[in-house]
Amino acid sequence: MNEARPHGAGAGAAPAPVTVLAGPTAVGKGTISAAIREQYPQIRLSVSATTRPPRPGEVDGVHYLFVSEEEFTHLVESGQMLEWAVVHGRHRYGTPRGPVEEAVGQGHPVLLEIDLAGARQVRESLPEARFVFLAPPDWETLVDRLVGRGTEDAEERSRRLETARRELAAESEFDVTIVNDEVPRATAELAALLGVRDLT
Image (cartoon, rainbow, N blue to C red; front, side, top):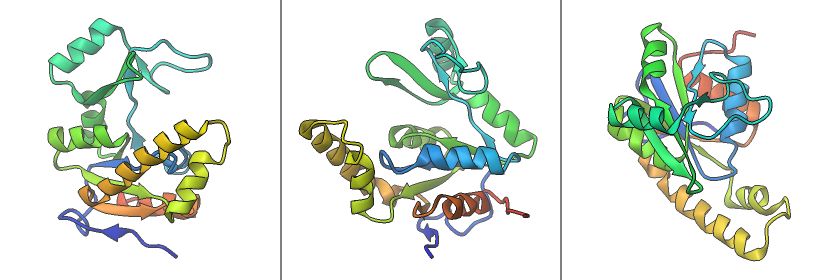
């Protein structure tokens, strides 16, 4: 059984009000976050704002906060974004500060599931947060997840693997590492870090 690998100043401390979850491409951040949402309703997951239009079935305020370019610019310029980025050179995505602070003020633990660049921005804007790195059990498992679908050509696979190597090298920037070997175990471990135990 794997245990969280603590490193850094915030590793053994009491739960932080805000926890940031990041890790390499294809490690399963979305799967773990979905499991947290389903099994631990007392944990609040941040909802990202985006300038892209809703896709069929997406609900404003649940899947994303859908805002105009002008609204997004105002959020950035007024310091109301914990982090943000332009994705695929088109639409902007980011984490609004207000809902996170509101949930913390109500006594709820808050989880931000974001990419590594976003995590680095949050460290600047919210240094008191705890930063958790979600890691694969080993390199081979990550490779299987990245290229196992068989939908990318050799050049795309190579690019994805190089990106994953760089992302794995960022582990030392985080306070704690959780190994995603089994989703239920990793989910429970993350919830425990947020101060929530499974009572079943």
